[in-house]
Image (cartoon, rainbow, N blue to C red; front, side, top):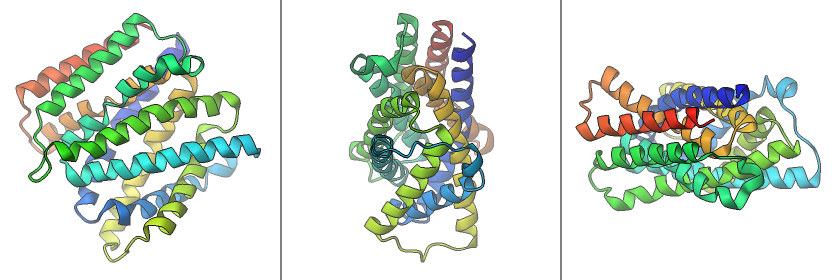
Length: 286
């Protein structure tokens, strides 16, 4: 029970940092494109983790371990490209809502990854479904920006599917002792930075002092968000942890209302209540 509570707590704190990261991603996508941003983003993540990695990171240097880490990093790279595409094509709220559908994919895949999924009670499954239902309701309550339409939802839904499915591979990597969260995330950041630079050939004309400060600040938020999420995954059930960590739309809506004075629709308030009820079921079901 203590381990379960820890995984939920870490997941929810991760969601708070994820809300700030989602809002800042939209700001950055007004300055540049995913193609030009991806290498800088992961390069900055690598630099933020560099001082801690030698002391806190752990990676097993075997062919099996490195192969698994490479596979997970490549899936993450594709998911992150679609993630930034989502914020390029949608406003922060709708992109966040659609990206947060990934618990649905994680839950749907649980029967195929029984060893990694762990025991998921009916209350927890119902809670995850309630969270997803709330997110769908919230997404329907936000209109895509002009020129987007349903086609603009392909990128966030694709990212959600990849992030959700990759959770089982990461859980298996941690269970095998191939890496710990700091070691994996450090190697992942460096690898994706190199791949993005080599394959996408980014342009750097958009980078100035203000853009670099914004990107560095967002990279720090993302590093904290993902390390909390990975440590929660290491000790908890993938579907449950994913539902808790993807509650960031709750905080996005709160931040938009508090700091940007945005007026939330009644449907969004109902969605928030549904998400909270789902999180309550997830917690009580443990």
